Image 1: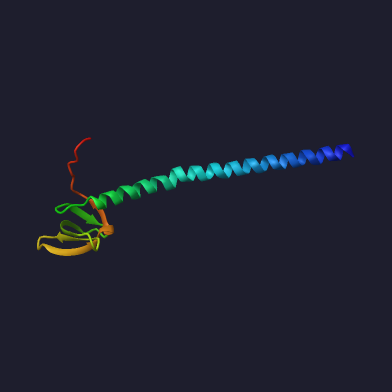
Image 2: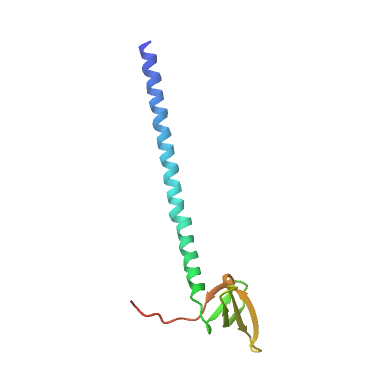
Length: 111
């Protein structure tokens, strides 16, 4: 009778210990996924938002659709830009979020 109580107590301890190990492995897996997938994506998104907020008239930009042009006006109230494309200087109005890259290098003062 004493041996059956000891065996059941040891089985309960072993099951409890493996539960904590499994829980710790899940926590580690979530942590690794955060640092490998989520954190770099958030950094990239913030960098793109900063680039879009720093756009100025005269910048050469490329839209997410591949249209390349030069910014000729910025409308803050509608959060849109007018870009001039091609030799015939046609103008296209696009939303600020549609800008994929700014091809103009700005000189920023070193602090």
